Length: 334
Image 1 (tube, rainbow, N blue to C red):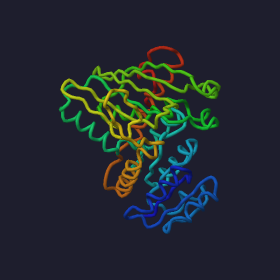
Image 2: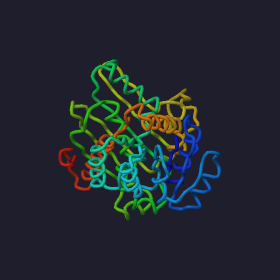
Image 3: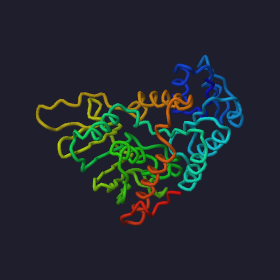
Image 4: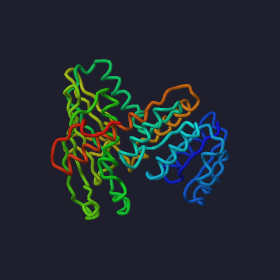
């Protein structure tokens, strides 16, 4: 396969190394807005070459991976789909809800598959939690608690372009709730706080936030997220049922310190960032995408899945701004 990669930044460079090592990838074509950066990444891999970003889609590709900054996602997805090239794109599908809706209409009207990168769907823990719910071993599920907590805040220049903490961070938890439970969200309430650096408030964002979701079967889900988890990068999910409970992320890397007598758990080390936490999942999702591109499997995370996760965090953002409960029916679906 001849695979194109748009974006040679941190995640793009990681994807380049992963793709170059996957069975069936005979050539990797790397492009970036910074041509020198693309050339630098390509030079480290024996199967890679670098081209201009505007040339990429026309390079006779069998598959396209989009890992640029967010503004580049929608144009490249559109170009790939219109050229009939299967596309993998990191979240978000587009920078705005309107842009996402436009791409959903485009993709659902053609046969070219698009796989959106919600890597937690390929994490062993999240998949086992999904199986536990589906098997009925937990009884009826009534409560979920999900968290995404960064150890340190991002660069100040990133915050005004991030879309806000719910869109940037909690969207993964929103997708995980849908993935694990198989249910849809009906209503959202949200709160947030600005403790920390002043650039969050200056950008109209918050540094810590929580959302309370009500699902269509009455289950409640609490999502929390922060830019200041000093103990370490912390991503977890708890699923509580009438007959049992399971937890994702409850291992020695847990970024909590017990203050109970005689307790040495967790032993550490903690994760520093999301790449440490989800490296195996990132590798697994790219291998799965190549199966999608070959026509051997359907997309495991469709544009419709991405839209539904986006609708949840749009509702959370609105609930935070207006201080009220927001029904998902208020957020467009077409």
